[in-house]
Image (cartoon, rainbow, N blue to C red; front, side, top):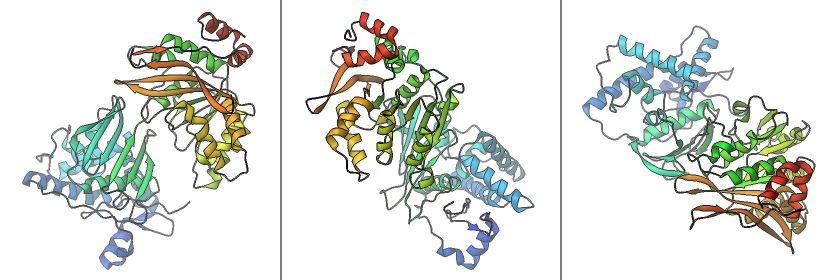
Length: 489
């Protein structure tokens, strides 16, 4: 299982790596003895920045925090199993599990009462109670706890050193909050990696972990970046339909585009979504999946569970895979092999990567029509080339010209290009892919006109696309024909 599970050690000067007994369970007492005897010095140590000078009031508060921290790290329970359960609960509180957080806030509150410390004032007065302020320092996310109280519209938190930036509506802005010291940032990093059975230390100066709600956290430390960093990317808890994306609140599409997308879905075109980070790719993919029939089996393959389709669409026939490319038994390649044996009607691949590009291409050309994926490129025209490059990396002797023709005609039949206009996420283009005179061409069905601030419809779908519509969704074909959005077949 890789490295044994290591639990968190809250100590005055920073954090060390805990001792592990013969059952791979952390022992605070064993670690304490190692510290006293000096044998723990060989453990990898994380370098912490010195905290900035504190006022007398802040110093008194931090002394209180230290006393409670020292109490919380002591193993609770009579048996090893009870002690491990306590440790697991502590780490779950770090990751945001509400029941465990409430449990430790109550424990902290009791400690404050026993030690008659309720008269203390936390440095930041925006915490509702002293217990919450202590929790934020000892177990929680420090000043980020204040940001997390208001998740409305919050898409990403970016931490660079002591500075914090909030991403809302696709735009990053400086936060009114700031860390007091780099040590606070590094403490949170250590808290997060431990429950995820990972490390961040001088030998491995980065980590990626997941929070309880599936949010992804990317961490880097000294030596890899000039300052420690954290990027917390949140994922929407809401599942929107295309109708919602038409509303003035979103303005991602208009009614004509909604009709087009519904036809594309029902006609079983293979689709690809492109666009920079935070432009609404995941929201669009989920909105399109919402329009797919509930009985059709959909298989999703992701590096981390981000789409959360089964959570949002409990009635749908969905199988969700979470892959680990460093583990051959659970890689994208293995997930695809199993997925293709589970009778999927459509495959939803969160993002095509080098390792599984060839398998996705084969899946799209062997009966899994109506599949959808995303690719990180600048424009729709770049997608086929990018997929070809990924396919060629596995060393097989393939003809790149034949491969790109195959991709353009069968894998990326319809493309959606996302972007941000003002403070709104919008579909900037809907294009039909083709291959003419030895090169990829994209036929613009929809294009956003920035000068006129509106969508235009330059060309109708081709006769090739019309034939596919007539086969799978003749009613939508007739609707688009009446609207002048498809050639007569």
